[in-house]
Length: 209
Image (cartoon, rainbow, N blue to C red):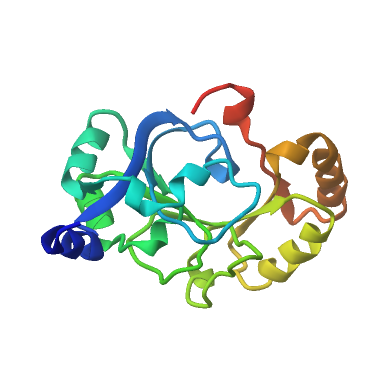
């Protein structure tokens, strides 16, 4: 990567784009709504059950001008979900400012393990044990989405829930490979602890991106 390109990436004017696509939001509070997804490369959180491990190495994904990405968004949608990888590894200030100037709502899905950046209409925080969110990130969360892979994850979910605001929506989502076993556990848990809601990866059931 030449120095000019690196400077643009550091400023968020260019981003290591893995993929972009228009689809239906499959998880959390906005399940079932149309959105344009921007998947940014780069992640060192290291979830062993991650279903997009190909996103981890940012060098595999070409630096792409944020302006070009936004032009593509404008053809399809009024809501964008920026995900990864871990999008907060990169500055989100430039692209979210540009999206909002075009009256496009900005959503993010993040582990919160990197410094807060960007202007967001919806902030989905999904903490991971391997690399916890920074303290500065928790107050921004509109939605806390905890992935449940085993019974110990319920305790971790409760530990994280006390760190977000009282207005933050709380979701428990079964890890896909354990969905048969853990969905039943989550149902029972939510019925006993109704502050939580259940999130399912409906896009996988529908066989869409």
